[in-house]
Image: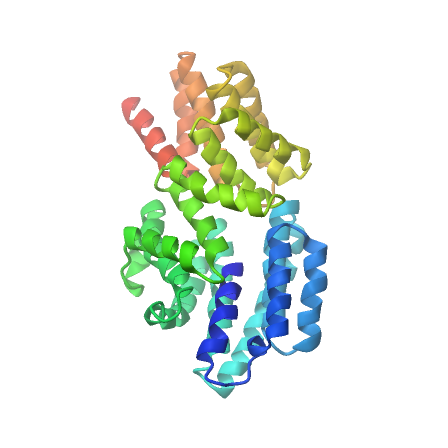
Length: 374
């Protein structure tokens, strides 16, 4: 969600046509970039101090509350504190939306009002999508799309719009493929094209001014989760893990690529770094990665099973769902039971994986096994 701000920082001075805007203020521009980089690297308290400068100078602008929501988004992942902090997260998003609405009341075409409305509605949609609250997600997505359409015609003038159009073109096709419950509602949205979306994101990653980090993030995710191309994903995740060594979410993605390409020793080093955080969300992922390493690298199914089961126990205690990693664990457990000749338990765990899987590779693996053992 921070990507919205990077694009806005670049575009508003160019397209505001002289209107008064906080983002024509080059000093606050630098302040916001500094805070975002600290947020990316999980330096949360330092980021909050920086964002306080934004509030002090522009108390009535929607920027501060959106920045704080962005901060909380990452912080909740790090501490698995969604239960404790989600109300505060929603509050900041709603305050940002209310302030943006005041801009639109004065001028329905106000760029900042439109932009922050899009950003907030997209953030709500993402939050509910991660929890599979489909109708809530769809309502916010439709409102975000209404504002987002403005950007479709601007990418040739402002390169950072390749990021937002790339995301749209890819996910408007991919998301209903992965989650068929959304297919009946896609008539409300313009058609996309996955390959065009990837090309646009790659263009933004290379040529963008403020969108390269988010473009790299989404490209790594796309190649891991949907395209099943681990080598390609590594070209992006390596850059993120190097630039933001304390962003454990980026490290998680990098580990996936390393395991997928058989670079087990390096993957194990990063996995130990996750485990040493002591943060439940990342410890959970570390257990599941250890399961994969003991299964694929050390060829020790008993130890792999122990780690997979530990990962499942920890995952079920988290406040933030980790369906992707649970599906990894269930599929791993299923493979181990299959190797032991226990078809009944293998089928049971592949069914569990199939119910929650978002990764194309896990969906295909589970379906193939269950079709074979009907």
